[in-house]
Image (cartoon, rainbow, N blue to C red):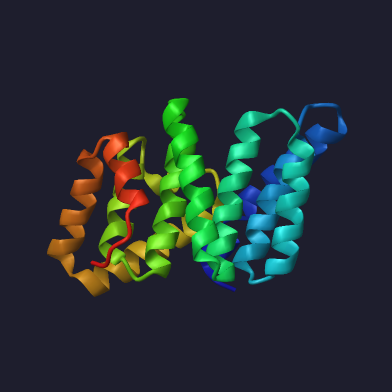
Length: 196
């Protein structure tokens, strides 16, 4: 097992805590835990269980809007893993647009990382780095502030792979470009297809 995968054990403990909160009457704990566990299933390659858990979690979210949209981001990432890139794009852009309208920085970071997964799957490595760079520019770093263990691991992988493929100069240029972009520019970038 990948050492970084073991590093998400803290997230698994958090999921256990969230589930316990749900059992004690705190809202949406079990639903949030199902989404996180489904995301970990996706990392393990168990896409059937991942879809089942994420959809179950979403069904239990009710009116917990932040959880619903983070869960939809998990569905976008899952669609990338399933090879359903058009579905991933549609859902990812919905999440990004919602985050923009509601000025939700955390959700914006998550959505940008999901869009980066899609760009990477389409072999648009420069775009992927730009999107992750933008997510990092919104907080203390894309990987540390995105509270989705699967995205943290995959963003690291995308960045390492892209550095090798693009070279240091192009990689740094894409990263800096992402950090300088406005949210409207990022939505436009995520909404257009193109190769590097």
